[in-house]
Structure formats: structure tokens, C-alpha cells
Image (cartoon, rainbow, N blue to C red; front, side):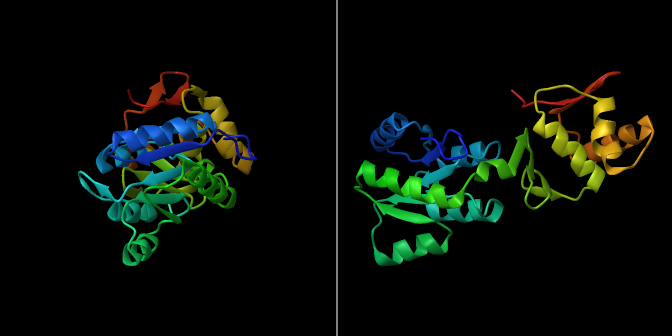
Length: 230
């Protein structure tokens, strides 16, 4: 399943019933989707803290809690991330509650896989490429639409230069970026001609605000690199 912007559709499915989860994954995989299954809310939450998929499917009754609270947590961080409830709870009050907690759609079990696929496709067509809004590395994330930086769930206040520095390194995650390139990209492009020490000071302040993250590495006498922690 490829949207018009040409990116593979990634689906996180929060479901503890392995038979249902595998049936959904098999069908959607045949449609070209990449489906990751999480048997607990905790494991789904951990995954979302490090990567945003195209869409999230959530069962209501989970072994470590209820999907409505999980949906509310998603909405507190990622308002545009598409969410669909897949649940046996079909009472009108439950359906209304699901939407009130932030779901974009609500599908009751049992359901036809073809119908689920159509609903996913329709929702993604309306939502667009939400994934491109967010950058992740280790416990650090950036919401580009809000120009906001987070360390875990804590929002960090940064200066314009600190934000631009972090964003550029995260957009080039896994690559070593030279000091010269950073100076040119962040300061010279803005018409601010500064000396090399400006980068050192800005990086020092950024590290302190981010609680000295291990994913932000100094390549001595060369530059910096951000890479996911193993």
C-alpha cells in the first residue's frame, strides 16, 4: 500500500489476541503495508516514543490497561496521527467514548478485512504524510510543525540556533556532519557570519538542555553525528 507521496504505509497494531493480530497483519502485508504488532500498551508506547508510523490500530481491552487511555496519550503528543479502534465493544456509549478520546475511526469485531483496509486507506488519504512531521533519535524528538523539541515526554525550550542545529543533525541521522557544513548551513545561510567557537558554545548549551544524550556524538576535530542507541 503506497500513498501518492510514495512512502510505504507503516501500521502499529496494539492487540493481545495473536490470532486476530496475525490475520490482520497477513492481509495488510499482502496489500503492501508494513505491520508491527504489540501485545501490550506499554510496548506500543515504547515503540511510539522512538518512531511514528503512518497509522495506529488499537484494541480497547488490553492486558495492561484500556485502549481509550492509550488513545488519549497519543492525542496529547501527536494530534494528527491517525488512530482506529478495533474492538469487540460495540455499545453506543463505547463508540462515542472512543471518538471523544481522540479516535479517527471505530471498527467493531468481528470485521471484514476488506472493510478495514478501505477505512485505513480513506483515513490516510485525508491525513496525508503525518510521519514527515516528526524526527526521532534516542529519547529526543522534534515536531517540525510546532518547532518543538522533546526529551522523552518533556518539552525542551531551545534557541533558534539550537533548534536548527538539532534538526539538521537529526535529518542527517547516522551521518557525520562536519563543523564547516554546520556553520554554513545554520549561520551563513541566515547571513550571520560567526567564528568556529559559536558552534562549540551552541552545542554545549544544547547538550545540557537535552541532559547530555548518548545519541548525540562528537567526532573529535571533525564534527558531530546523531545515531540511534542500540
